[in-house]
Length: 604
Image 1: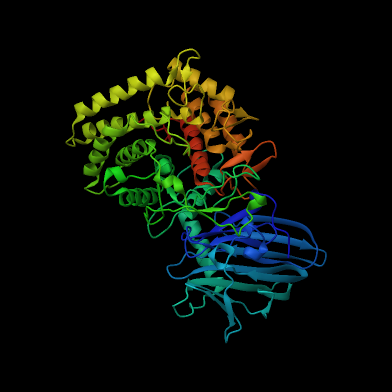
Image 2: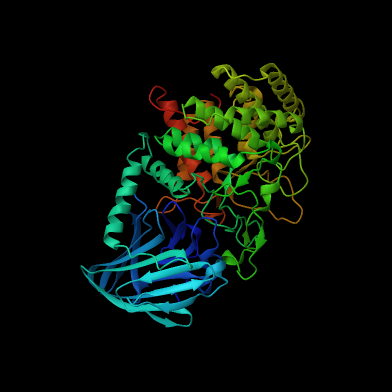
C-alpha cells in the first residue's frame, strides 16, 4: 500500500454536483461520500488509513517526477507520472448525469511502457463496513453493504486479496485503460454501463459551457474562475444547496480536537454566496441558492437554525466515529454538527440581507417571502438583546457579541429598505425605532472607549475578525474614526505572519494552547475588503495575493493556513474561502474600474 498524501493541499477535487471526491498526488482517492455530500463515506482514508477505504491507481515502478492540472476550465483532473521506462497520465472525473453517480479513471500511456497497479478498498459506513463483493459476468465486480452498492467495470483482470480488489497491468504509449466505479442503492438493478470516452466529452462540455457564462474580466481571472467552479462543484444539483466544504473533521490545528463536520449549508454564508454568484454571471445558481434558503427556513421563525442539510433537513445530530484515528491523529472524528441547535443572532441579518440583495438584482422571489421576512423581524424584535453563540459558534456560555448585534441592526435596516423601495406593507416606523435602539446599544456597550475601537462582545475587551464586516454591511461609514480604529486594531493584534486570525490571541482559553488554530483565510480577505472601502487599494491587493498564493497547484484552498508549518489546515476545499477570493477580486476590480465592474460590498 502506498503512503497517503501528507498534506491537505496534496488533494484535488472532482465532483458531479451531487457529491465529490478528493484525489491525492499519488493517484489515490482518499475521500468520497456516496450518494451525496452528507452521506457516510465509502473512502475515508484521509481520516485514517487505507484500510478505511481508498482507490489507488499508480505506477508500480518508481516515479521520478509527477505533475497534475485540471484540463482547461473543467473539473477533469490529469495527473502525469514519469518513470524510467515511460510516462502515463491518469485522468479522473465524475460525469454530471441524472442517474447513478460515477467516478471514471482513464489510464493513458504517453511514452514507453509503464507497469501499473490498481487497489480498490471499499469501506462503507465511513470506513467501518466491509462489503460483500461478487464478480459479474462482464468481469467487473459488485460490492454490497446494507443499502449501498458499488459496481466496478474495467477491461483488465480483477482479483481479490485481503479484502481488496486489485489489478496489475501494463500501459503502452497510445493505450487508454478505463475504470468506472458506479454507485446506486443495493435494492436496485445493477446500474447501466456508461461509455468512458463519451462521458469524458460530456463532462468537458458541461464545465466548458458552465464557465463560459462567467462575466469576471479583471486580474487574476484564473483563480476567480477556479473558485467559481469549486462553488458549483459544492452545489447539490437537485436542491441548489451549497455545502461549506467537502469534508468533515480535517483539523483546524494538526493533532487538535477542533474538528468539525462542514458538509452542510450555513446561513451565515448566504449573502456572500449570493453576491459571488450574481456579480459574476450566475443568476440561475443564485436563484437556486436563494430558493433553497426559502425552503430551508420555512416554518416558525423561532425554529430558525444556523445551518441545514443540502435538502433542508434540520436535525444534524453530532456523533464521533471512534474507529477512525483522524487526519494525522487529530481526534475526535465527528459526523453531524451540534452547532445546528445554537442561537446565533447573525443569521437573521444574513437572511434579510440576502433577500434584499436578491431583489436588488431582480431575482424572482416567492410571493410568500415578504410575509416570512416580516415574521422573522417580529420574532427578532423579541430576542435581539439576548446573548448568543456568535458567528464563530462558541460552545461555551453565550455572550453579547458585537457582530451578532450589528447583524440584528442589518436585519431591520434591510427590512426597512425593502419595504420603502418596493412599497411593501410593514410597520416601518416600529422597525426604525428598533434599528436605532440596536445601533445606540452597540455604540454604547460594544465600543471600548479606552482603546477607541469596537470589542468582540459587550464587556469583553478583545477583538475578533468579524468586526471587519462592520463597514461592509453599512453599520457606520468606512471613514468613521471608530471604524478606522477598529480595522487598525484588528490588523495590529490579529495578524500572524501576514494573515488574520479570527480570535484574539491575547484572550486565553481554558485548556487550549496558542495557537489554537490556523489563520482564517476568509477573514484575511475581509481585511482586504475593508481596505478597499478605505481607499487603500495597494494594501488590499497585497492581502489578496497573499491568500491567492496559498492555493495549491490546482487552485484549491482550505479554511485556514498554519503559517508556522506553512500548510493548509481545516476542511477542504472551503466554500467560504473561495467565495471571499471571488468577492475580494470583484471589490478590487470595482474600485479600480467603478463604471465597469460590480462590487461585492453589502452596504448597498
